[in-house]
Image (tube, rainbow, N blue to C red; front, top):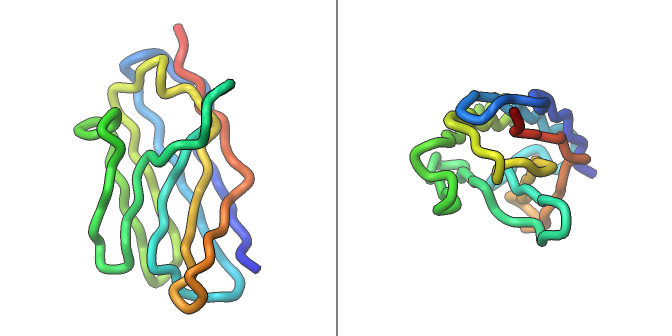
Length: 117
């Protein structure tokens, strides 16, 4: 079972920045992909950004050029630097990891990001 420790959410004004961090631990030990999804009130969970073990990234069109994802494979951590935040970025952000061995997906408990003046 995978355990997650997420941090970095909070309240920020439009145009501001936040950095989300996530550390995954437990069995299995390696993850073919890690990333972040988000869910706003009344909406479905959607992909924000993912990054593979080899460093290939994928971003939602709505965050391209504003968000940057990175990971440390040795530590099983993934970060999301969010710049130029907009009100529509307000959501609960969930850390995500896909097991390399099993192909199964696991999710963190979520961290709230609120963009408001």
